[in-house]
Length: 298
Image (cartoon, rainbow, N blue to C red; front, top):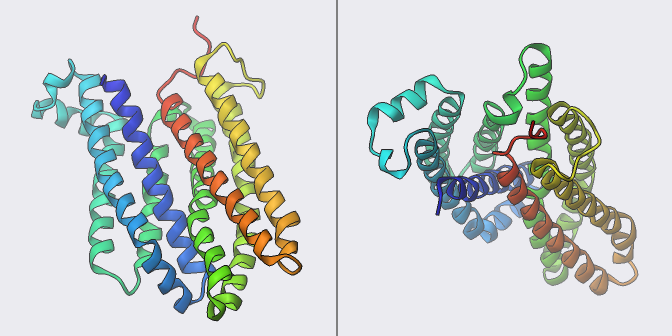
């Protein structure tokens, strides 16, 4: 694989992992009661263990691809002076260095601190996601405009990550509603809290996404002949479909839990799984067009 391809795959792995860790642990921390949170954390542990692995592999891949792209290919991976120059003299190197430190702290916290794991993992994963605004398109402007874009990008990343990261715990909650009478009341209370936070996350995602597109592309009208803008348009379409699924779940299928609970739970779960798939597709698109020129070629 070429360095560009490795970079895209690594960005997808890293971003997906950080997203799942942030959204999932915020859900466990804020949305659920402590007893139910502990039970869901045990159930979701294999997913988050996988996310930790993907985080490490994604970061290693990003480092390797960056060195190869800035240097003369894969043969420069062992050049210590080049690695030092990237780390000290480039915004990408600064970003990767910060992400290395945060990933190490997250590994230690995840492995040792079970008592306050949701809180500590939420904080460190949030910082990892925010570090994505250090370089790339988020850093393309200077001054006030640059500050606005960076702030909007951080809000967008955190809100979108919360929205998507909430969904795996929601799937487990739906299963508990169907199979565990002792958890029914707590699960319903958690779903109600999720609905409230989900409304906020979706709204912030859409508003900041629109602002980011305008600040990066320079217009709200996308040109489909420009590769970056074409992939961005597909990502926007996926986000709108996810929004439609969320609205259907909340206002059409959730009310049916009282009259046809089994059928409603099956439908909500299917729609939630579809939203997860669409969200991962959107992350893959961002991993690809995030390294492209957003403007038409001269």
